[in-house]
Length: 126
Image 1 (cartoon, one colour):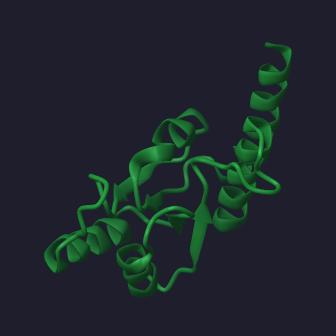
Image 2 (image 1 turned 30 degrees about the vertical axis):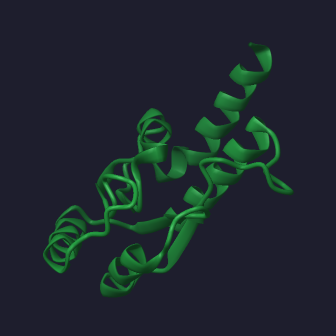
């Protein structure tokens, strides 16, 4: 419990400067994480895994992102980047990559994975 509390406090401090800045995600896997730290999600490119967005859906997401002042667009290590890359390009924003699963060098534990995602989010929103 003490380790998780310390991790939460660390992530809270990491993300505090970017709290309230909207993002667009490829998938909903990190929604609760972002909500916990005050990062609004304007939308999801693939609300259901494996369902590619139609051109009309992509246009709607781009319009939503512009209306909500999205500051960063995120793909995930394990998912295709095609649709989310199109949104990032249309918004003239770089595409950042989050990792909801970990299990690789530098992200092999829960703590290192959460720190990795927090740091990517912070860099993207600064």
